[in-house]
Image (cartoon, rainbow, N blue to C red):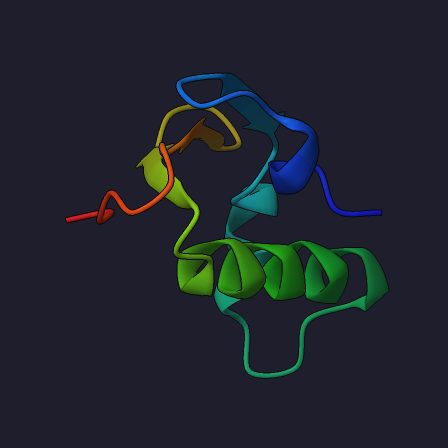
Length: 73
């Protein structure tokens, strides 16, 4: 299920543990780290959201739903 289409423009989604002890950058991450890595890559490519990843603790990603037609830059 995708959340971005269900979010109102300007809404925030907070995702915890997106660095997973640094395992997400391993060449061959374990199963859980690989799933988080796939989420991170998918979220980075999504033009409907603006992302900020905060590198404290195990990582916190904030995604803001953009209004239609607005660029993530």
